[in-house]
Image 1 (cartoon, one colour):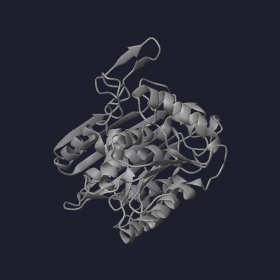
Image 2 (spheres, one colour):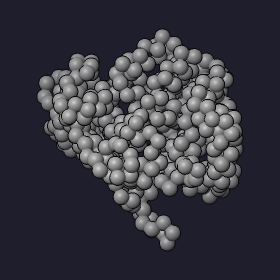
Image 3 (cartoon, helix red, strand yellow):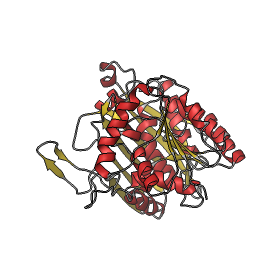
Image 4 (cartoon, helix red, strand yellow):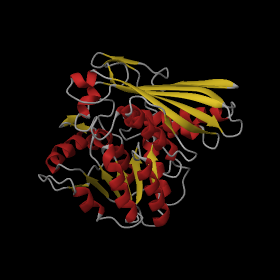
Length: 395
């Protein structure tokens, strides 16, 4: 069977670790997507790699960065075909790159949220399988259109939500489903205000912090409540001031309160999802935790603190998470992160593209995630009004 060629749309922090002309200061200085794909290619599991951005002027510096943080470190080939050409600026370069692929190849979309639908639609119409960074799209109209296209073209469209591959989150999901109706679910996820500088170009324009961060735990909760309960209404609230002080017109934090209804009992549950990108620099890049109170028990997870602490003269105190992405090489100097859930979420999609593999967060299964996120935005834009969801999540 022909190995799928892979096109990545977007060349930012999560793909390459290269931000504003330099290595990211976050915990993803070597990126996640690119490193994973370079390793999969080296292992003979995928074919050619293509990267598409808008500004070809940054590709020479990006290649040098990737060679230093990946190629030299792990003795790994980091070559790729780039679009547009070096020195050119072309916001439509992704279309040229996509024309190089054949049906059955794969496209990974890691761009600002407002571009997700157009790119995923174009890829699926060409018979290409598509993995989209969360949120998969911003509206139910777009989401339903992708469901229709995926089924018409018989292609896989899925959302990249690596929390599903975290062994602790996956275990917690099953425990929650075994504890009866849920009464109260609360989640919190934050990143430091330095992230706003990285996202200055699109923060508050193409998306907000709820789409960017709340999407993680909303997807997890929707996954945990699959065939158990449905969301019925959303009320949103937000704080501001920090981003505006940096000249960025967007909210600092967004909280969504969602009422849920259980299918069998009719009992109600309340979920509160909070996200912020105005936190101080701390021991982790991202605070991430949730708790779920059910009729027969409670589950609590603090993803940022798992009993692993490191202190160095250069970097100070931190609590690293090699379960997400292991950057330290093995004893022979090779890459050793194949079991990390950031890696597995990409690799599993490409495994499914070739046929088979475990269940993914497909466009058909993540509709309620989009419904909640869109309703939250509508609630904020409506002054915090309650937004009711229909039987199938219609707003």
